View 1 (tube, rainbow, N blue to C red):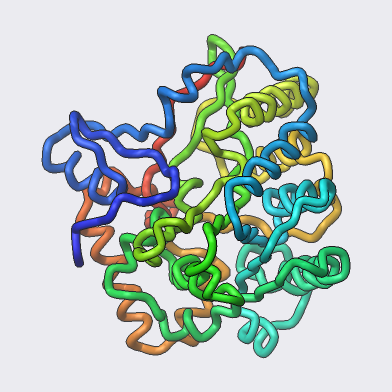
View 2: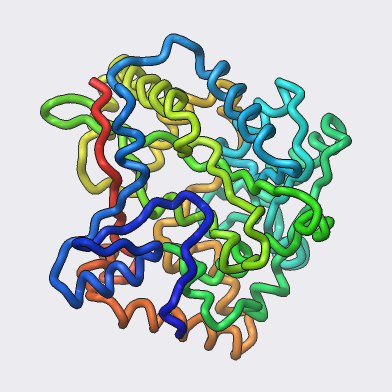
Length: 381
């Protein structure tokens, strides 16, 4: 594996180990192991610290979401929104549409061929049954978009073949971030699957992701908000994949240094929801949460900050780990032997090249994900 990694264009922040900075977490952890130092993740800490997070902006969330849509639209010639049907991407789509701000292309990615041939829609919300979101949510949503946003291209990236054959380069582990499950083929290849690839040669292009809901915590001395590196890594960088296109970038709709006021407003809205529902305040306590508590925490955040979220919409439970995701189990049954070997080599490289203390385990001692690193805490009350 090539240990050199090109600094990324997306604003993921940097890992600091002593006086050294790293753009890739694996390298930071390896250096920390070699030097005995503790890594820290810096997510625009100095910039965000310039703002007073204790003062809630007077303007509504609608105002800030609309401003963010305009801000992103003005920044790029060609705008691509990555849509999953979940609350984060649905909220940003709603505000682009509501304010008549044009999106050039919408991309959604699912193993469609596999789902259509080998699964049947059901009402199961188990994480392993992710195909149900394709049938119950995404397909209907794409039909709505086609009718109501006819100028927007719709691209469905069916990654069945890419996943079955694990069509990624040998250094795929350095593109994967935290999420080294076989689904990485989707998150790497999607940038080359847009419906009209020559836009990269003609335009400044923005790939927009709905990252993410605010993380709000209650501690002895007050309320805080922060960012988590493992959430950021869901959106892969375009830099190592499209290394000749410096004018192509990834935008986080929410977790962006371009509009701190929106983040501050969101954090206060979540805090106030906790305060009017004191029986749920235990979800905000700074501690490791169960999967059920994380689901409840996400539900509360949606209620607080997404005014157009469809509360009754079908939703599967989230996967319980980043290394093995329940809905990727079909890969181990259907993929080619060479594909499974290529994935296993990357997984083995990662899990043997760093100290086990940087890895989280479930109750059965199975590895689930790399330990997350939080940014600086910003006090909101």
